[in-house]
Image (cartoon, rainbow, N blue to C red):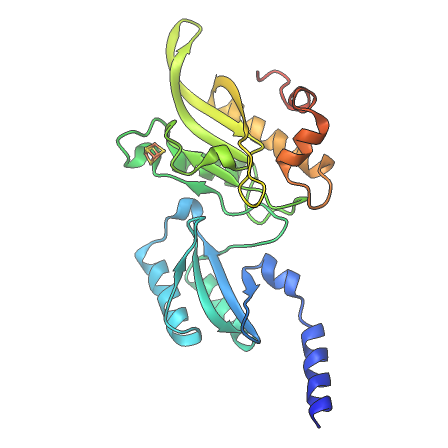
Length: 252
Ligand code: SF4
């Protein structure tokens, strides 16, 4: 009898597409049949109604708690496979977006920038929106490996862009003998077990330039990165100058 139950359980588990669930914001948990709902909102800004929606999901389907992630998303742990379709409907009705995991572009992190931080030089929220809506550089874009973008309003870099695949920050300085406020960028950093600091490209970019540069980097990595190879490792393999020569045309 135990063997039959075990066999049924194995075939039931075999039919679950865990990767598809992960892509759509349901990550397998350590508990049997357990999942964690991962959500995101642009720049980590949830409205009060969206918070209420997630609180209700946590009460009805989880254990009444939510978890704030380091990428400014909100997770609801301890949900079960059988409730996933109901939870999906509620998340969509609540105008909350699903997060992701695996080899994909993760939720972009974003400090408040000049919207409400007194040190902010650029409008980080507006920039994040343009990157996502106008350039299509948006979670959960499939890529060779995990890929993180962090946007900061000033060189303090509170979102730690130096150790992200792309780190954008507001920057002020002298350009062609005039003072200028624009964008700086780090490329190819990462955290994790083998952390690395990205390459700082020494120029104050305009908004359009830096948006184009990010698009190019993501495209190039998508075409040339090997499976499971992070951007920094790809740059190391190609050589820094060789890599920069592929993305710089007309920009720096
Ligand atoms: S990076 Fe600069 S603008 Fe952003 S929160 Fe930190 S101090 Fe403020």
